[in-house]
Length: 179
Image (tube, rainbow, N blue to C red; front, side):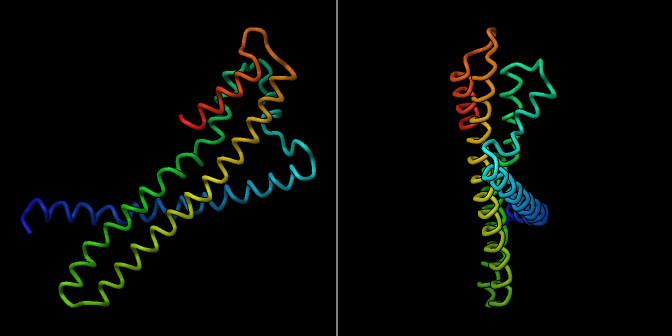
């Protein structure tokens, strides 16, 4: 191994612990978000509009327009969207970093060293994929609920200087999906 390869190997090993810590934090957040979703679903089952977070926000900010409501919707979904997309990437990173030492252990005939590295690699990717799956489900259900609520708000109280309720809800749906 030349100096550049050795440097790259050492740099990649340095990132394993921070990546694993980020994955643990993402997993904890995903569990928390899933719990919040289940509570909100139970509230919605009892009452048609559940906790109605946008209605409450709108009451606290009566002068807010459609753009402010859209921005609030995006903020509500931001962490779920980020984690659902970043967790698999970090899972791949956390899988690949221990693979180098595992291959070195195989070449040296050290099956125990290989097994230890593979356990870390596979555990990391499983946690990452579970985090991504949970936050993806949470994001999509909450997005639908928030857009339904946004549409109800805009239909009940359209403001003439803002887009129509249908076009605003469609705009937010497009921005949340692709933005």
